[in-house]
Image (tube, rainbow, N blue to C red):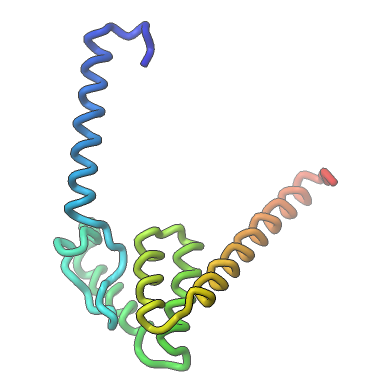
Length: 147
């Protein structure tokens, strides 16, 4: 912290940071954020149980859960494939809780380490291509070529 700040103020700020760190670590361990329904069929759990959706109006939450459940009904894609797709989508969306949940479910539905690894590699490739695409558009827009 800056030495120009009065000593008492520095101590007060430091104490507040410690309290905040303790509060966030204790609440995080007691109540893990889960951004998607845990049930295999997408059945919703109450926000009090998941620590999620607490700021979403219950009617919108219900619409989301119905949509989520519909995407996991039996269809042309088997459940393992759906979970592998969900892993890739979770990476693209940068959703840590989603990623962890879908990796667990992919394993549960029979995905191998190699299948999960390849799914991750595909997501990496698509994200790398997106960066190239954005920089190509920027170069064209700016009328420059670096190489």
